[in-house]
Image 1 (cartoon, helix red, strand yellow):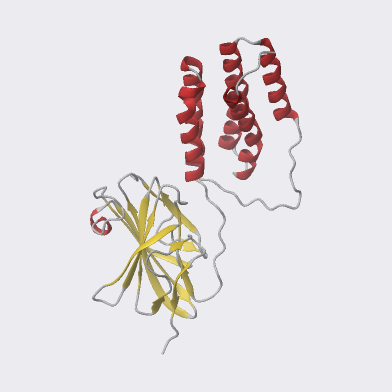
Image 2 (cartoon, rainbow, N blue to C red):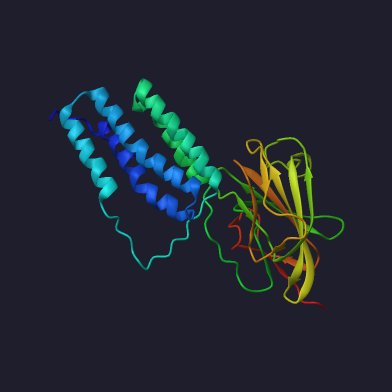
Amino acid sequence: MIPCPPCDLLPALAGAALVFLAGPIAREVGGGIFAQALAALCVLAAPGILAIEVFRRRDPGDAASVAGLWFKAVFSKPRIDPDATITLRMVSDGYYYAAGLLAGAAAVTYLAGWPYAAPFYILALFCLNFFRDPERQAPEGPFAVAPADGKVISIQADESGRQRISIFMNVFDVHVNRTPIPGKIVCIHYQRGRFLAADKEEASQENEQNTITVEGVVGGRRTQVTFKQIAGLIARRIICYKRVGDVLGPAERVGLIKFGSRVDVWFGPEWEIAVKMGERVSAGSSVLARILPEA
């Protein structure tokens, strides 16, 4: 067999990785037609990518090696700890984007060679990372948790005594949003607007946004917390899963914002802020504020 440089193994490794991922992907999202379709795409795309590369090189030795690698990837038993708890989740949009990019990568590989398809593979991985939705455990106690992953870029008080915390999410943060407190949604208001950079102060008022108010009992005290999903320069779509009247559990998912954005949270005077400027927080698990006992 003619020796090949290590870079020529990239398509084979990519194809094998797709096959290895097919089962876990379907399992992580709990099955369903879309998960099954993506898993099937992975299995079908892998030998296709490998066959294209073999055809390009026209080396029977490579064909045998590649076939063996694919056969091993498909039929070998994965090493899985039976006691392990799988907590990875993903928003279904991530699979749609990744599937489209992988299809594009296969086409570009066929027409121009795998090096030109590398950006498609990178973008597919980016989408899978962007739409991840890890499980979070809300802390017990009289707390309000962060509704979004990201960095605290502003803490301000207004004339009414309310305090606003602004959290900026970059494209590498988890973009699934959660309720700060358990309770009932009493108001949802959507506002069209501009698409300024989400870290700018004027974005809080001028950008497209969706405002949600939750009323509940925290630490034995009735309270309301309002938070805004704010679109940014890149983010152009706000998604809200809930409706007025829905009852939310601790840190329950309420929606997401695609591709970089911001969430503002308003607390009344009964709340004591527990974070500082520049601090990074995680949705559903980081404490933003604690409620004060009634006088």
